[in-house]
Length: 241
Ligand code: GLP
Image (tube, rainbow, N blue to C red):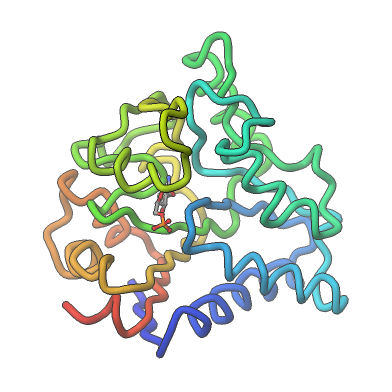
């Protein structure tokens, strides 16, 4: 694990974005693993700026998102497909037919999970996977107790994660408690992993991930097994290391 501690969230976004820009410029048809949540938004803004300044092109890029709420279709404003369109895809020269997000409206989610895994394999596998981290150490929607060898599957969200993400839903609005998420085993197969964390509320999770025992109690701790995992954090998120 390489741990990069930077002053603030803006520096984290710039550093993380540069890894993706370098990757794509080395290999135009890179396969990217992408993430949602508030943390990667600033990184996506950096990618949009770089694309508009012709410093990187997404024309040949393929992307796979980590996860999606089960029960929301891609037009739902709280779906992760919608988020990706709004935060990145609509603003860069990517071919949207090469962007994949697990289908939240799948008729048969179990089959859909298998198909998602197959599609990742057929693409040649993820070159660089972007990750955030939940306060409880989750990555994607792999909540504590997830098998460290898990594959893409349906996962129930913990009460804590539902509460953390409630801020994105209007009061009284249906908020899914189920998701489809790449498994920890799936994530570990990416050639490189870049995890971003900012803010003091992530400090416990960052400490457990980097310095704790490798355990399903903190799913992100599985990254200790990865050969090329870069943890990019600000001083606040690093405060308990
Ligand atoms: C959600 C996503 C995760 C993300 C986490 C943290 O649960 N499924 O991929 O890492 O939120 O989000 P935030 O960056 O908003 O703290």
